[in-house]
Length: 566
Image 1 (spheres, rainbow, N blue to C red):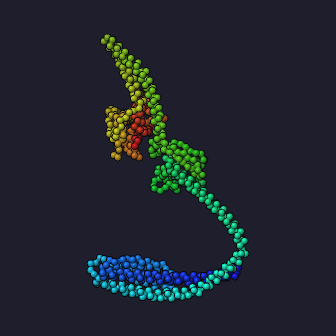
Image 2 (image 1 turned 45 degrees about the horizontal axis):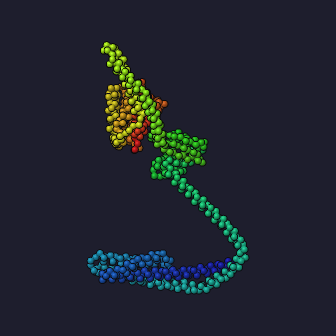
Image 3 (image 1 turned 135 degrees about the vertical axis):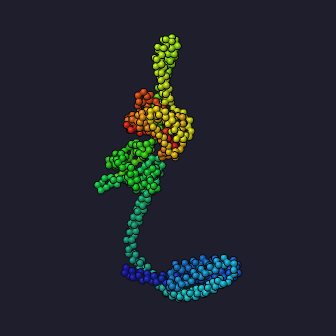
């Protein structure tokens, strides 16, 4: 083994010397070729430009154009080649002279192209300078070529002397290597077989791992597509705990497109951001407390909540614990609740309509008979007798008319409205509603105010029917206020692209448990009221697709908020 190592070292050294000599020869040849190409190109470029300057024959331009890129490539090639025995100073000097001459030739060509005067004056001087530069370049080229050729011949002689020694040393080293390898072959064979088995096992494991990675990537892409296609906001969070182990905040780890659209306040993705930093208004809310409880107890949370920013928007929130965090799905169920309300309203109208038609049929016929009998009795009585019972007859007639009007109002409030919709200006609707109750306001000494935002757009509505609904709401507000102190407010503004009308009063207010009963037929908060005005208004607004919300505080007043669809 020692002998083998010794011969290997000698062989390596011999090969290094041989390779070094061979490399120097190739480098010398490359430098000589680059120098020759550069000088030849400069000469061709000079001849082409001189011919063009003397004859103005464009045929001389072609050699110049062909030689110019060749010279530039040769100059750059000298920078990338090894020096092959030439000094930096020698090569840098000839490169610099070549660049100057190429620049001078280009200037001669450009000056001739832009001048109408022949070769004279400055152009002759340029020709003289270019010839001088070419002579200097040729002189430098000869000196460099002689020096490089001398080094090349010396390396060529060394290569020839080492050429027969290298195969011999390689042969001896090979024989020794074969003998040494034969002694270790059986061990190497066993190691190789073991390595092959290990490689096959590793390859199987790698393939299995790659398959798992591909399966996981496919599952992740599929899951993302499914999540992004969902109309619900789907998000996952991990807990951020303080030194005491308490949850201080949550961090987004997953968010689909709908979540980004609703909760991202910039173009940056939500993943990596903190919940309370992105949504600071969530602090100390019931929803945030519910998220904490889900993480700490593992009990799922599911509830329908009203949006804090839009009272007409309802959200269904479903949260489940996920490791040390939770995943939550938030769905806008406003349209579903609206559809449920409209369905319930339709059922109520159907029931009320059936009752109303039954009452109308069962009451109007006897009422008509009573009215006819009363008129017939009054006609048959003498003047003296009639005079004595006229007060009682008037009472009967007034009450029969009231019963008839009550039946008519009940039928009107319980049947769907047929609308003649057209674009309506909101300020005009407000002014018309205020004008319809102005007499009542003046009579009771109450004040009124109408405000409409300038950016309001028209709404599609039946102006006559919508005017009835607004008038009924205004009348309800007036009846709830104290005489001489009442203040009625009608306002319209834009809220998230929707027209919103507010009808507010400073009356006695409504208790929370009575708000849901406001729109029931025959329910009235005042003595003598029939309780059909708000029911009729609700029916008209439902036909228009308008969402109505009521806010009230006892002793402070009530506000009806009407939100129009797009």
